Image 1: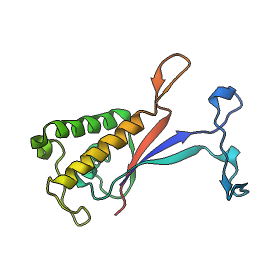
Image 2 (image 1 turned 30 degrees about the vertical axis):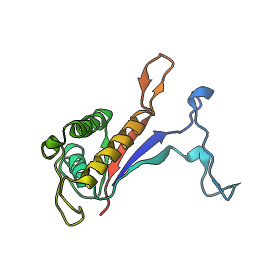
Image 3 (image 1 turned 60 degrees about the vertical axis):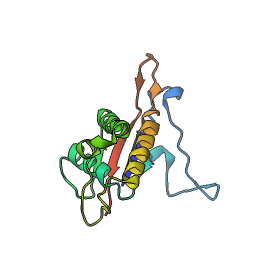
Image 4 (image 1 turned 120 degrees about the vertical axis):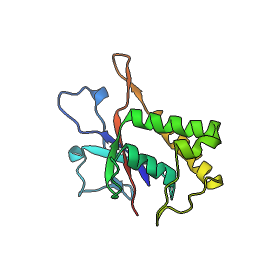
Length: 157
């Protein structure tokens, strides 16, 4: 289970120096010829990884991929990440609400569905992943903060 961050880095002639990204691809310390930096449009980073966090996966399926559980990649908007973060924090505050707020999901690849130490480790990890991802906002010239990247969820079974 992966949360990735995709940042648009394409350079355009109308951009100021401060608005541009410089992409450099090397292998063994040497530039590579088969990847042209001026043709790179996006940089994708893995910002989160879970293994058998079935309650978290269920939340993404129910709230991000319209119930589709097909190993696809799905856009996750910032309010959705904030919602999941808040649910995880509520479970931490009141563990008796875990089944109500973030219920485990059974299935062949999901592992145990018991709300136990592993479940709460997944909750802690999710809080850490989302807080780190949401901390990567920037302030524009107009003083407003925004996220320069898009987030995506994918699970591979």
